Image (cartoon, rainbow, N blue to C red; front, side, top):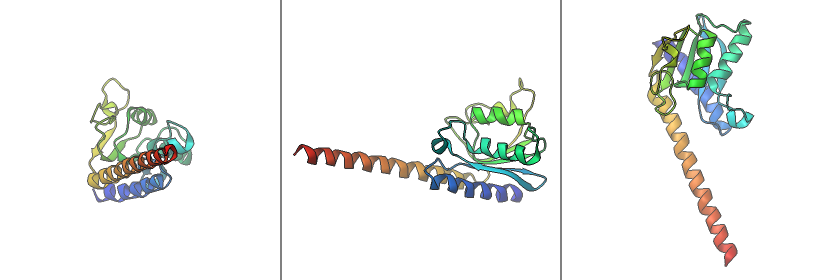
Length: 168
């Protein structure tokens, strides 16, 4: 469990990088034989790419590092439960294990809404370890969205004040 916490802390630092550029703070890293082989964080807004999720970026980097599209025996650490797009990619990559922090009650595909990672109809099932540093991961996300809602509310208020002053 200490190893899982170590790598989840690394994923949390990657989530911070996403937040610094205005992205939803999700970070991911891929570990093989105790070594970091890939990492990533959310950039769909920055890249104008709906597929630029943290785990997808981390797996692409890892596959490039090992020069193989299959990541047999690798573990993906991710601060948020994977969505269905990412879960499908992880199955295709043959990742051995997914360790995640916060559950995603709206789009989680590792047990919350559905479980694609262990679906019996698929040709590969992935071991799941959930809840590693869950509170830290969940707080990072909820704080981000709370701040974003405040910013949107303030911007709307400022716009309304501007419109009122222009109409006077």
